[in-house]
Image (cartoon, rainbow, N blue to C red):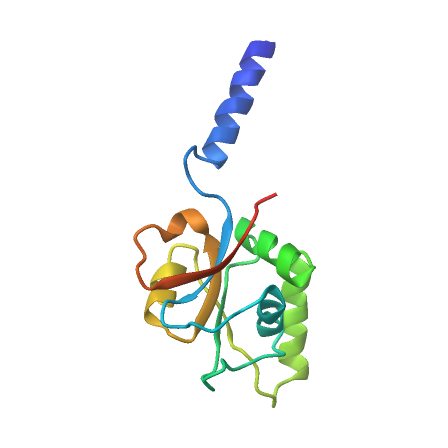
Length: 147
């Protein structure tokens, strides 16, 4: 009985986190964006305190759905909130700042983010680092550990 439970735990955990994949969260921009970007800059971008790049172009902000594990890691490390609270904060900004410039927060699936960022010089996003293989036009700003 105990041996069966241990086998179940091992199989379940390996299904969730396949061996050999990079499970860190990568914060990424288009490869043409050479601007120095700190963790504070990222927080300011995702909270609409900064809405343009140094070159004056409006920033296109990409988020994952609230239920995505990468969004939870990103929200906790960068915004200091859980993903649900970060989403509520963003929704409240939408209501309060209807006539103010702000970053459009575009929600996309994890698999689409690398393709979008490769093609959009004004994009910033975060994804599981393992999903970035073979992406030539993406620059990784920083990695966040999964917990």
